[in-house]
Amino acid sequence: MNRRMIVLVAILSIIMIASGCGSGGGSGRYTIPPEIPTPGTGTGGGGTGGTGETDIESLILSGWEDFKYGAYSSAINKFNQALISNNITDNQKYEAYNGLGWAQTKSTGAASAHGSFSQAVAGNSDAAFVGLAASLIQLGQRDGFSRALELLNKVGGKGLSDNTTTFATKYPVGVSNAEAHAMIAWCYFWTGNTTEAVRKINYARTIESAADSSVTQIFEALKKLDSDSFK
Image: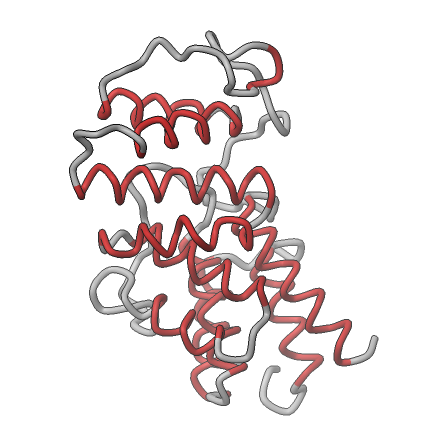
């Protein structure tokens, strides 16, 4: 496997983490069909029908409920409805953008959610920090890894470079604490800090060590890229 393919495999692993398709060990993921219907939205969870919700807070909560059960199109519709409401507060706007970003990530990939997460991070949400970092990694731009590293080091106040930081969110977005620490290891590697990359991926592996986990996949990719450092 050549270097380019190794990189693509590891980035795919991170995309799968953000999209909720990874190993799921301890991540709180739900085992669900790709898209299921929700009452009031028509077949397939398309989200084009009436939701019966008009209150902004209710729309946001209902959007997260749809997200929880895999009705991502309906969730996107409800978060968008909240965002076009005239009386939405800044905090509600940030939460709606965060929900929209995760629903878009599950539906069409992290890169498609870049704009939503870019709006959501103003609310200082750990979930938004991780979501925007994942979208930057998927976009694959050179300066994106540095920006992703900055975002991941805002999580929990101390940042994910600190092993005492635990990534946990108000709503389960499908990314485990170990996976978040593995993501920052990947970013450290691509910003030239191999020492920190080794330290962080080894820490992530102490939390989630299954052979088929996303954490292990990222470790194996790093090992193939630098076998002297990653053992």
